[in-house]
Length: 630
Image (cartoon, rainbow, N blue to C red; front, side):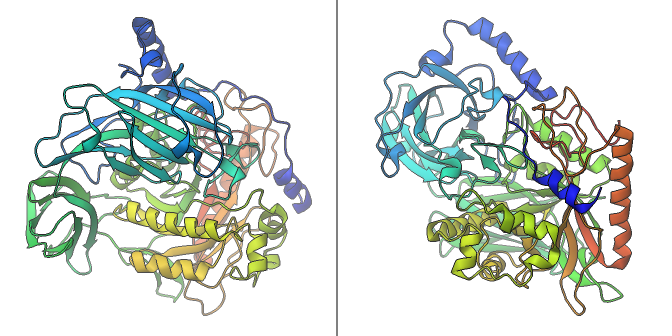
């Protein structure tokens, strides 16, 4: 297929139809269990009064944040009551709208109303509000304790009420937040939690990832509302609020830095072996609201894909105690023996064989239908011969990174893109796809260029920067994350050089892919190219200290009937048989592998699974078919 035909294949848009019912094995089990429980509970269900249902909370198991665990917590996932209401308009209507008098529907949290697993199956429109309500019973805080309500992600803006009184507000669709609701509780009575949500989706330039209200091709169904865990936690008044863990094999120590509520207590750190045996310990008294403890470790057990060894951590501050974990490993870009820049793990070159991972599911959209589903994706990638996943334009739930930490799966973590919609696809996709030279020397700090990259709005740039820094602080303790990816294909790109400086100031320990695809600003640690329609080559400038990676390629499409959400198929090349498709995929991967000898540091094949119309995954969208191996 010549380049003109291939480009036309990439750019064509199919007629939209309603999605076909499609369930993953985990989602089907959850649905069946809910239907069975619903029959037993009919007539007194949470859809009527918002009370806590007995079904639906088992999809996502274990503590929501395995790196920051306290004993006193409980899940608020499950059935809530909900109501859709017209937005009154104006600024931040989620904060000013009157609460509905009735909540006639029920919704399974943490699935968005657009997701089949929510039980709603309805799009929240930009001119609407979605109200949630449920009762909850958490242990009454004792003297000096506080009760926090955690929301791990709500898309996009929300206001939270406890017993009809405002607990707090939040804006931003991908990062966790919490409210201290202690002073709003009704002692001896049942407590009620209410949340009002507004989601403008792509009608405003907020970071939104690959969500579009009019989805199709490489853009997916917009989702809204609560889409990650909701949970309560009882905490001491004087407590650890944030941890930064730096386990350095080069320095021979682990340093635990804590931000605390009030100074004056002793921070005590114990390092444990994988079987729980104490290895080393240390302590320091907090004279300010931040304190660090260095624990020497003379011969640490290194972490890597073949041996993902994790140490346990027990951290106490006064009466507060948190359990966590860490891993000793270094990641860097260094020259090999021939002087070629390579990605290095523990100072040894490691060739990166990666897959693009969108993190979408037909029954849960951005929310996986279970912890086992998350684990199955990671295991499938490893079984197919890949050692890295590029989490694409999404911040995943914390459990996913924990599973990658345990499995030794390396992660390239994208920042969530946004900007004025629709993107200028000729500028940010079609022209660079046709010719790699078409996008050279295109500055991203010039106002006229930022307009062409959909990043001219200063409020968007400020929000993207805030979310980028928040993502780093949220995820930086996970050893699996080995590279930060800042901008993708010019979607809302701006001032990449400044962004690199800010990221390095927060995390100097990881390499940075500043501009994945094109519009390179000569910064970061990688020359990062997307190449779907040209012969794969290494284009590393002579004398460059940056490693060359093909950060997207492939996208070869094969449609599996009965395992896709839509009758239409979208991909970057067509094949007459599955055998022909498999041969083409394997040949292309072998071609990329062979470039290691010519200076390629790694690659990312598109992609792990099909997503809606995109049928270029190695797995089907419902994860029931391994297209490459079966």
